[in-house]
Length: 359
Image (cartoon, rainbow, N blue to C red; front, side, top):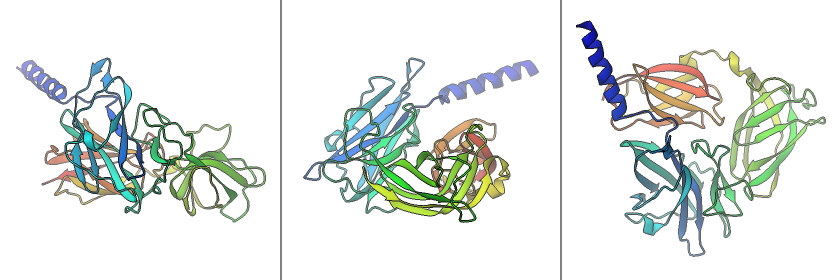
């Protein structure tokens, strides 16, 4: 009898998993490029990948475009391969959606296996929390990714050489930042040489005179942290330095100057894995299918995300993050009960905590 019960349980679990399988890697659909003509008419390019997994089509049920004026469904879309682009205009949508050329937020939503997924929004101009200027005539807003198979960690930038219909590269998207680096004693960092990197500033090192220079994408910079490591030492031995805040607005082919002043240095691998100090979830218990998070370590890397897991360890959703605070919206079909929340920074699990959903 015990063997029969175990077989029934196993078959039930297999049925549930196959009804809503966990796909790896999952489909990714996101913002690629946005431009306006002289009359303010917009054209939007979205991109996709991982639509075919092991040569099997993964059913994407629908794609939506949301802006400040509303939300509309893409009428018809066709995937032509593993990686591709789809051009979108007003005529491509089920209802009229306006994109304001002086400032707006563009959010791509997509559903597969009836679950909602959100791409990182592109926010520009005079819209609240905008990270980009308005594109001028002959310019566009474009996204760039070092990984063509994942669009969760794109960098958005003003692009002076639009390339609609083609995969974006960094041509026409970068300016230059340069200045001097000062250590925590306010002395020029002449030695040792350090390798710095961040998602916004890219990779660079200090020179023998304490100066630095690096190409950066054309957007608004609000930096407080850098990661770094010593040359000839494994990049996995990261250090994090908190700096005096840097706020810049960079445009293509411009040069801006900003000195970097160290304030506090922390070995990332020495951060205590205490969920109470690393990640806080509010409210908890949840009365609605959303929560706010606050993280005490830098998360500005190319692979930082929050995972939601069932109490049995099954991953339900994954949310890329680029800031140390924000809001997570859970899937609409998430049932009441206890769940685990895991924080990953640079693909390393730094904290796991629990939440209770009691709608």
